[in-house]
Image (cartoon, rainbow, N blue to C red; front, side):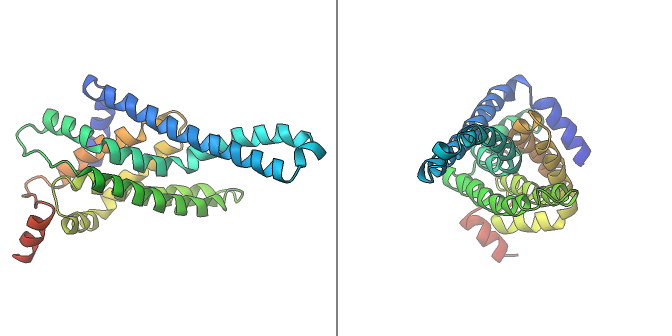
Length: 242
C-alpha cells in the first residue's frame, strides 16, 4: 500500500492539476525560510552592535555574514519539518480535492477542514516539531546520533501530521487517532519517506505537496471498504451509539 501511494504521489505532484498548488507551496516555503534568514541576520546584527564587537573585532562582521548563510542551511534542514506542517495544513484540502476527484471519483468526497482547524493542526505540529528538532540540534556535533535522532523523530512527527490531516476530512478526531494507532507501522514508514526527503536539498521543498498527495492515497487504501464517520458533533454521536 505504501509503495503504491509513494509512486502515485510521485506521478501526480508535477501533474497539471497540482502544479499550480505546488508552486504556491514552494513559494510559501521559501518565503518562510527567508523570514528565518532575515531573523537570524537581524539577531546577529543586534548582538554585535550591542556588544560593540564589530568595532573591536572587524573580522566578526564577515563571520556574521558567513554564520547567517550557514544558519539558512541549518534552518532548511532543522526547521523545514515545522515549516512543512504549516504549509501542508494550508494546502491539504486543495490537494485532497484534486486527488479524490481524479483517482477516487466514485467515493464520497471528504469534507474540507475548517481553516482554523487546519491552521491549528499546522501550528500544533510546527511547535512540536520545533521543540523536537531544537533538541536534535544539540546532537549536531555527535556523529551518527544526530542524523539518526533527526530522522526517527521526524518520521514519527511527519507521518502523524500528514495522516491526521488526510484522515480528518473523513473521520472524527477519535477515529483518526484510532486509525493511526491501528496502522502505526505503515504511518511511521510513510513518515520515514518524508523525513528522508527533508534531508535532500531542493527535493525537500516538495515535501508539503508530495506528503499530502501520498497520504491521501495511503489513507484511501488503508480505509477502503469502511464507512467514514463524520467529524464534529455527528461523529461524537456516532461513537456514543456504538
